[in-house]
Image 1: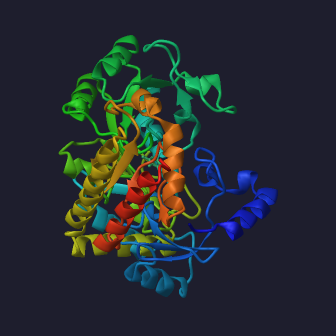
Image 2: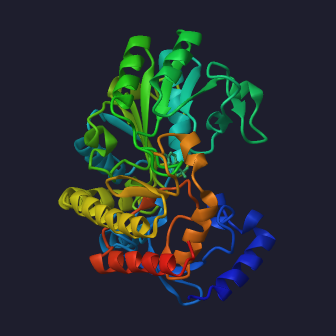
Length: 431
Ligand SMILES: *Cc1c(COP(=O)(O)O)cnc(C)c1O
């Protein structure tokens, strides 16, 4: 059983000067309890923490690190670039190079604008959709996450066709009324919103594979149904591929699921571990952005050469090693099968949802297909599961509402060690 004493002390100190001791809430372990692990360094599939523990990592910085930590081609690109200056607020050639690369890899992407976070990408994508369609409302799905801009921090109001309500203090009613909430995998809930707000809906935004209520897969026909509704109603379909882009396939979910977006957002993998995100579409839509068009969007550090070099190195590696997606899928399927067997033998009811290298374990007897069913899972049991594995050197996402992200540095020995850790925890009655 590993000790996390020094991490605990560091967390105490952090809480004095950082709200909650962290710069992003899920890191604080609020939903699993206990004290977060402070990382000192990482290499490949392993985290080395402040107590000198070595952990097998299943979050990969929440997705970006497809090839594992401190991946040499990315680190070399960043190091070389940093020596020449990190930001100029002027155009650099590497911005065109990464844009050309993205265009060649992702279907339907003609032009792309780079920003610094997925939040910014999604926020800007809906502004562009509104400017383009001259409509004000958007549809999002309960349980899908598109960053923390005001328009997305909205919960369902009473009844399917009512307006959304703020789910954070500080978000105004005025903003909330323009975000309509639908149910994931329920096309009827979307149709009802179009019926109630005819000609007012600029866009539907959706995670093609949901990863922010745990991993939840789109039912057969769901995304296709959204595509058809958008076409019929003159709304844009925004696929939020911040998680899935360059992770499920080089062309993201659009390629993996053969679905065509009007606008697509990227983040995570596209920056290779540096703060990069982007939104993209066909030229006719993107040219509505300033300076060509009237929809305003800007950023002092957007497209800075340091971050762009990391992203370009990452996309280049993906292009050169296309087998990575197959390799990741096989590893994730192996873990999935191993976990399923252990839980089945112990008679612990679970639903393991998986697509490619994203997966999550829900302690539930019934399928998890939307936010309500994700909430019905046994999150108390998840806590025990999380801590049982953490104490054995396995780092899982510290919440039952997050996806695991496998990285290709994970070996089958690591996967076997992880399955063995679960087996041991189950045998000792810890889960
Ligand atoms: C992570 C994520 C975001 C937000 O990106 P940040 O870089 O954290 O702002 C948006 N959408 C999806 C689907 C995400 O997974």
